[in-house]
Image (cartoon, rainbow, N blue to C red; front, side, top):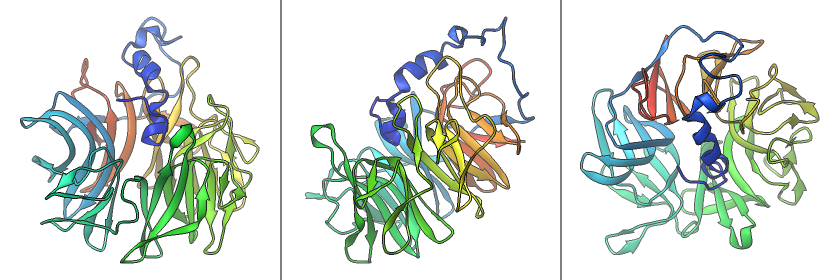
Amino acid sequence: MSSRPQRRDLRRGWLVLGLVLLLAPAVFVGCSDDNPPTGPQPSSGSWQDLGLSADFVEVDEFATWNGLLVVGGHFHQFQGHLESELLTWDGATWNRMEPPGADVRALAVYDGDLIVGSGFFNQASGDTLPTIAAWDGTQWTPLGSELKGKSVTALTLYEGDLVAGVLLDNTGGSNVSSVMRWNGTSWQPIGGTLNGYISALTVFQGLLYVGGLFDTAGGVPAKSIAAWNGAAWAPVGGGIVGGASSTGSVLTLATDGTTLFAGGDFSSAGGVPAVNVAQWNGTAWDSLGAGILHPSIQTYVSALAMNGTTLVAGGVFGVDPVRRWSGSEWIPMSTLNGLVRTFTIYNGSFIAGGYFPPSGGQQANGIAKWVP
């Protein structure tokens, strides 16, 4: 993995040190074989390898489209190809897709098509495709020209429309982003710009929520999370701050319909102590137990998802990079040796993706299915 500090990039900012420690667990304080970490015992169950064969696997994004699991990331030496960015799995066989751009950063399904957002673009048939395009099963079609040369960092659906988080400019080390809405023919900005980076988009109680690393949204003070009410951006209960970076960042958002969950690198949500994960009920923030923290390495939550009625978190946790929320504490879900970036449900199974190379008794390589 690389070291850029935003969604994928923000998460990668701490990755080099984290991986050194993750892949050498004996250096953890209190985590050697002679002095194992204390805490809840792992859930019964195990992670099952999905048979992805490549020298290097780094999974960043998932989507389910036309019965296929679509996987975006970096795959070295897959089926004779030196580098691949987009793969599909039908439950038995892995295949390669040729995306319109490199560095796949966001996936979605809209109007029956697979939507791929990228960090930059390649040449195709002599034309430069934009950083967002639709695949109908036969060909790639650019979605407008407004995002050409920009970076698409997040995708979701809002009121039936496709919405994208877009990095407009990062010159001089300062990021400027916008939430853009596709009207069928062109991209239109929603409520002005954000003075930072967009990592996540989701819809909760009819409002569009954006998370990332920023101080303002549409000129309104909003600490790393904001909500669009159809007319303007608004802060969310005082925002999210603190953490190892001191500024606070939101890397992932998820909802069960009644509660919005935020994960990232932070220590406080709306003034309430909350370590790297917090919950919002539409009115106020609250913590989820003691949060997720390792005593001796940089810890952050980069993935949140519902597995049925259970909230599951993934990230860089030092050990056990997948945890489920019991209602009172975070319970390890067996062990994977590495970090987890994303989750999805495919054919009824809960799937985790990230960077966890095979080692010891762990056979999964960057992607695994949970078997209770």
